[in-house]
Image 1 (cartoon, helix red, strand yellow):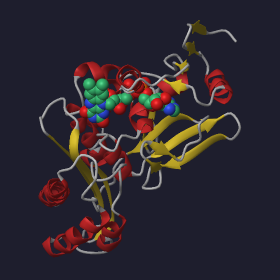
Image 2 (tube, rainbow, N blue to C red):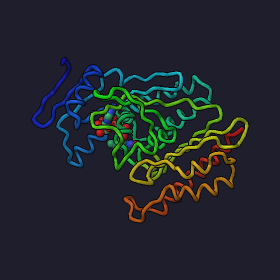
Image 3 (cartoon, helix red, strand yellow):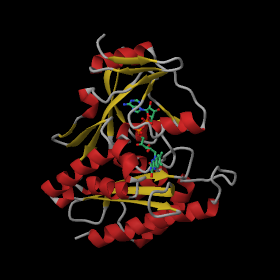
Image 4 (cartoon, helix red, strand yellow):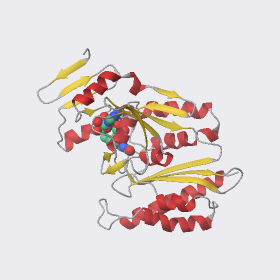
Length: 306
Ligand code: FAD
């Protein structure tokens, strides 16, 4: 195979030029790490002393680096950097009706609070998803949206997997197999009666990791305040990004008003149990943050309703 390969004493670094070669490499070395921005792997190798003998760099594989508008929304290659994704989504927001780009806006706004410019310039969306950090800033938004992931490996070919509450099976573990490559994500246009809010609470406003973050995605019935569908994504409330199944189930079909929200808040605490010994501590604070961010979304969405 013709591509750049650098073999050092401890690490072999491959830079395949075709998607086929990338799949072949992942098949041959299922434990190999696909590295784009190195902003997660770099921390693991430098500070946690982890070693990865085989590294695959997909920066010249077209399928992973493209970003394009589709009929349903935007397809973002997994190796597209956060900054490039942000720039593309800003253009989409300018180009389309406000109601169609509410999810894009939530992503763009969140990226303002995501790390610093340097990290956003090299870090990719795929790396954020695959790392599965419980305080990732993108995952609550993508999970509340239930985005579709394009995943592929050499044996099984292309599959679409929904990023929902089942995607993470453990701390930084996903349903993907070790030889799977995340190819792209599909972020949909929002619908006419759909509203989307996302927030992050950190110790410092800029360039800090979240304590709790949340995304609320609600679709109303036409010309009504009745909730047709609602989905949540929460970070910082478990060992993984989570949804809120009981609250979602309860709110479906209910009116969007204070009474519904008050009842939903009780269920939300059941959906987000935090063990007193949970890593990170500040249990009461994190619980009240989750409730406050939900209330904030309620007020923000209420203000936007016609
Ligand atoms: P890499 O380190 O290159 O890869 C990460 C992991 O993903 C690896 O395990 C890799 O094998 C896997 N992977 C990557 N692409 C694929 C693929 N296509 N298929 C399968 N597996 C793949 N995160 C936040 O959410 N919010 C923040 O505010 C934030 N701030 C940060 C600040 C600093 C200083 C640093 C160092 C990191 C920060 N991060 C933050 C985390 C990180 O920057 C993001 O998660 C980023 O999106 C990771 O992308 P990357 O390309 O650098 O990942």
